[in-house]
Length: 175
Image 1 (tube, rainbow, N blue to C red):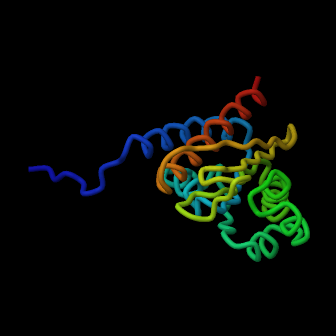
Image 2 (cartoon, helix red, strand yellow):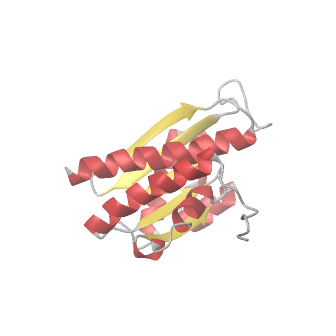
């Protein structure tokens, strides 16, 4: 009698895996490599990518830069930039994305920094605020999103959005 795996995938995990598969196809066509720089997701984007067999053909590395010191030490984000704008800002996520490219052998990088909660939010940056950065040969794109829900929901939505937007940028680069 076959056994059922104790790990059942959630809809969010299945969506992330599907998005990663589509990203993988486009990365492989271009022979590009991907790096991630993650704060609020703690490596969840990298984990979703590397859950795919064969991901070493298009995924090079992931930086988990949860602290400000890690952002500075691993990605070269200027401490003054963090002090001036805060870790959850457009300026910092853009520096994270660029730093991921600079400190890797990749052509594409995804960076995220945000407030997943349940604490840490403010009036200006409430829980659920996430800044995204995508660096591709076509340039650097950044945007902010505000996700509802608890910590797990914010982090899951962040992974999905990061991968979905990466997919659209890669599709545009391939057209």
